[in-house]
Length: 241
Image (cartoon, rainbow, N blue to C red; front, top):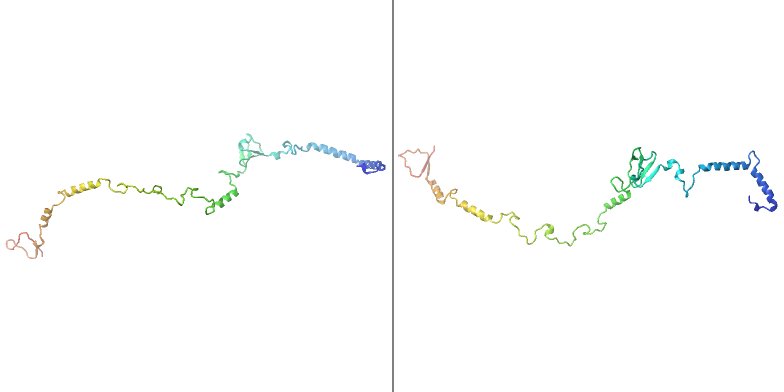
């Protein structure tokens, strides 16, 4: 109540009126109600959480609030876990629970990453796929960039597997007989033609050709009688019926 708002003559009257209103006229005065309200607030204060640097200390939070704990890697998890808590490996974003003897992954999930057991980011995958569908030369690569020959390249014989200009082939290179084989063939030929045992001579051929002359063959149906028929020496007589 601000008594400065009233004149000096009214201050006493206004103050007495304020005290009467504060005391009240019922079974319980307003002062008693005010005292009860103040006591209720005092009784409830110990049950309220404190603020430390604007935050409620973890010790004053309900147990379920601290059920999820994070570690940089699974290797840093406590040796013995606690039932009802969720442990997060922030290096893989995988979550685990304590089974009583070991950490079991909760509903095995697929975390983002670039390893065999992780999923690749969809936006990067889409970008890579779209790039793979591009045609032409989107990177502006040169022949040297991809190990190809320039358009001005003039290959040598060796570079394309051809024979050099000064190549002198050997007999084996062209599938011919080795050097000296011609004289050996000629020697064998001479020996063959000079072998009189396996070939007939000209005189032998002439003698054989003169053994029988077609004009010396006489064919007839008349029987020949020895002593009575005129037979010529060297003539072959054929009698047929």
